[in-house]
Length: 599
Image (cartoon, rainbow, N blue to C red; front, side):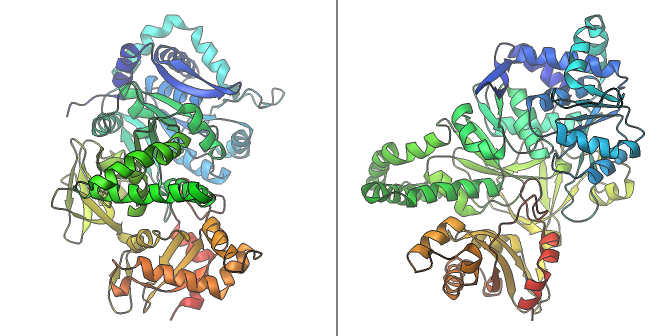
């Protein structure tokens, strides 16, 4: 593949799609968009402002912010100035911000609002290398001159606009960036162990954006809705660089609480999410259907039933029956189209990443007439390695390699990958780099998988997650969990059992489904905690485990479980910012419950 830089890709986009909408955000009760030409101007001005602050080629600039248009402009300006972005999750506590910024050696820190500026205030004395802190939100107080290192982001932007005579020098600097130059230091989320800074180059990202855009057939007519954290490599590449490479637009969700509302306003054609998001959307649709009465409830149930039959036939490469096709045509107009309308009405494609997608979830959305593809990759691979393809994805697999990327399976079952997307290495960690990337350029992903006959990759689990039972049998807990999540009564599940005679699990019931069941079984007045301790609910969940375990080997069946009334959350530290379970944290937090289920 031809090597290039992000600066070159975006220069092409600013010119080719100058009049098209680029970034949109809600202001005054409605979404407004700036064009690619206007985006180019803002990026240029901020880049000039950063250079005026002393930012040099190769410098790292840290970016601590939730998703917003200023994040996108900041990142693109940092790149144009020849520097590299170190993104930080807005949910990180001050101490972790301090550790990452220090390790990255950043000279400038950009923050979004008062909450993030407070973190900067807390750690600034410990970070003498930070010369300036830029604050995006104008309403944040910067003190009465006591913080001479704090500047308003807007003023730096406007200051750059007054330095137009320096544009030729800025362009020379941007063009001097080479494909192998550092574009970003992204620190792994650290579900276990010490976070490491993955060094991702311009060509790592550029090659991945072009190949992923081709796989998903993205066009300038597509509209993306951004809500996953831009600090995560999945959203960074697929929800930021990819659409901007292809001339598509990006609308920023106000917050996770307004996701549903913003769907109706942005009306995206492409939506990215993690499995937990799709599970929640599916549960919400099902719950809404259960609240319907009479003929409307009957039509809803029939539409899902017929849609599932037709969908499964098509996913299997078969033709649905003529009767089902005719019934679906009628039911789609009356029921399924209304469900799609609630999701914005224009979705042509959804993509899931970051963790394993339960097959039942993919089948559910396909039955609604919404294509949900699944991809696989890691921070260290920029991130996409494989992706299932529209219009008929291979449910249960992560598809085939994108252009330019290779995959093979090592003798122990580990997935290895090689290509232009593989990172340069870990920042200041040569030994860890050598351990991760072998002499032939193969990156050791740490995941276990198999390649199907058609070339599709099927993921079993993380190598470090594999459980070894007392009888010596190996169990991939993620496979068990995604299988059991087929139950409408299970919202979250974490499977354990290393060195035990049988598997055990911590289960969070689906509150809405359980409460509806409770109303018809004499438990309507019970609290969530009381339901989790009720013998009737224990029998219900045990039955669900048995019903959904048909495809699992006997030793993969969960024999013991504990019901928990509260969901695992990011705020409680049990989930990563992309909603992956932190197994170690959960195991420590619920050690007593696990001990009670042990042999």
